[in-house]
Length: 110
Image (cartoon, rainbow, N blue to C red):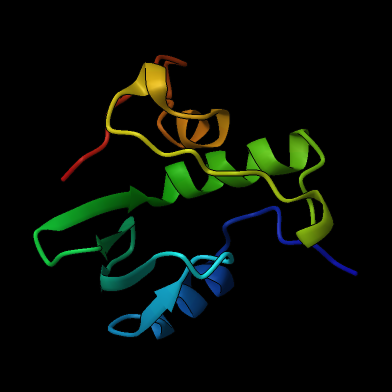
């Protein structure tokens, strides 16, 4: 089985096809919708319509790097996201998505 480890133009184009569709996390305990997709980021609406999160293309790649680097490939090696508004309370996957180019933790953008 092949695994996606690079955010290339093909993957980004596939992401744009999901714009406007309601999706759910693997455990099916939460739903979200991709509301906007452009060349460098997409915006996710979670829970209520007032809760939005922008995920940059770089953050998406950092997340894939974390998953591949820690052998979290495929459903059998899945890892919990453990998201939190506070960096210190977030899990390692959520923290990995927040790193900036200068290797300093960033913040979530709403």
